[in-house]
Length: 354
Image (cartoon, rainbow, N blue to C red; front, side, top):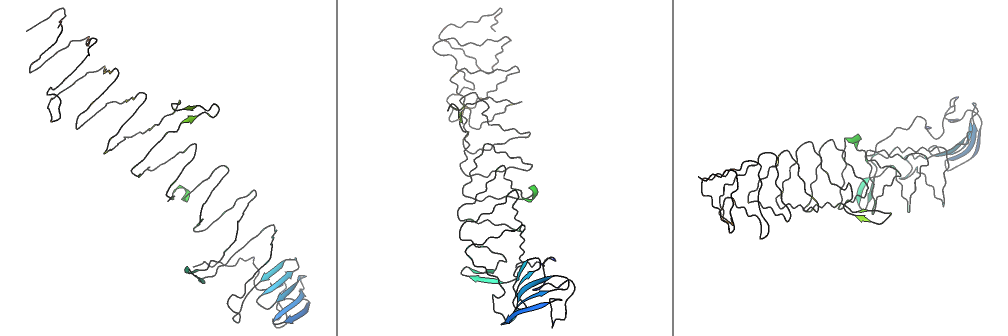
């Protein structure tokens, strides 16, 4: 239902306003107090010129409900109206011309609405809008040095092909001063920007599909045309003051061309089906604290050996050794067996064999 709006107090009431010195008897002259010159009457229409004692005057064409009136300020008033004897659609104003130009200092338009008036089309029955503009072609609205403001309960932009918003410096979407909600529903959303920043005070959620890919773009020097992948400062960083949890039901793979460095207060690793490390270069374990290794040695169906701990060092060329600057103790509740195809040397200040 369209809302009804009260007519502003500045608007003139009736076909012709009353003079400031009051009206005469309605049967004689309901709208003037001075001279009245009748030009003619025909089919209920009166064409006349009038004047009032207060000095105001004017020219009119009037039938009692519709009127064309020119007052002493050279202002033209056009008012339409219909009574019970008129048919449907009466009381309107139609302007048909080749070109129409309005040049004015200010322009104000107020539409009171049409209540529950309905219109019927092939698409059904709906309320007839109080204000409607139909243009067969382009529409251009320009505000020079000012703003364009649209205010309504709801604003709907409906385009068959494209809606484009372009600003010279900044585009701001403000939903309820930061307390509202912005929904984007689309088959594809593309963001092309030099910087994207999210400044959030609540939570950040991403419910993604089966495939999520993040690609860091190459850096191109426009002056030289050089393409560089490992540019200085090309990093991906995650900084958090709390914890981080990754739950992966499949396989996680890290391929690093450079070094992979992990720093933590304590590194805990748990595997359910075994652990394997492969290094094609030097491999170093170094600790300034205590090193403790426990090998329970329970063979499984897929075990390649029944040894609790198996260490294979050296190759066909070179020497494998360990240098310790502290005491080395070997304790076994079972059998210690040493087998060599070369020479076994025990070198020390004191050698005890019990």
